[in-house]
Image (tube, rainbow, N blue to C red; front, top):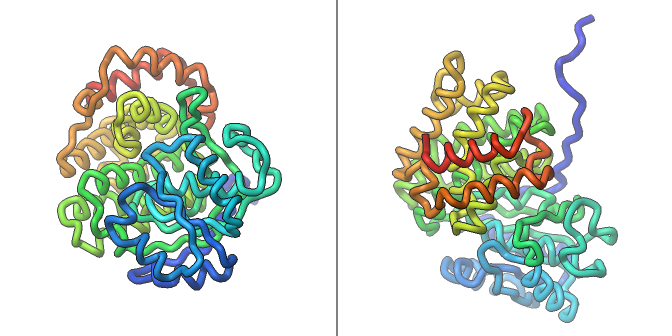
Length: 384
């Protein structure tokens, strides 16, 4: 009898996914099923600008609003929002926005029913009392956070990004309405789309990859390659908008199981130290890291090359680079970090700090050293 080549795995995504144009109108139905006093968590501008916040408030009679979420939010913001949630007696949390409001909403849902400061709950198992129910309404096609058990925040004490991981902060419901992404600026469309691609690609080569996740990830990669340039060219292209929102959700399902790899671990430094948007930071590191991955797991990189339009039987390191740089060219952005505000003098410090924290590359295949991390940064800086 031939033994199966499939490895053992668990796959757990408990979120109800509500997808389609106009589905935001179902928010009240889902909110009422979870309680009567929601706290809406959103950013300072975008949800108001597109009308999503006003529409939500018209649907929810007893909702309260925390609308002070910044880009790359920190623990202090979460604690302020959690205080508000407790004082008002809110019984569930609704996130409206991109990854930042969803990260804060998840932390708030946990802090509302657990003692201690936000930073006390970083890592897994830090929310012993669980969390309030969460509804996630993404207004960008990027993080896939609406279907993940992660809250990624800036730890003000260390100045680094850290993660709260708990099954209790999987949203109960994710409402994916592509109409909410219609007015996304071109830059946000591109950067969030690159985050989708990065998450999907990383999920395939992660040490925790699953067969189910691989299928979803390849589908996400295929859709990003086809529809991201269209969404970037024409924000009114609602087929492209819907496809990107769907691909984003797929990538979230992937990393909910597989986690991310060194691409994300390195990209955080571009974001926090240089102000590079999160998705773009990841995109700038994909080619260097995937040349490395091609050497260590060619059987995993070849299918990615194929769905991105390259030759899976060719030199995979060259092919994956050509595919990624081709996408960047079509999006009219440089693949060189030097062109996005990163200074070469910062790379040594970045490499040293990443190498000192093995959590950053716990899922990364191949032997990783500080010298190799610096090499990845240098290649990314040059865009070679």
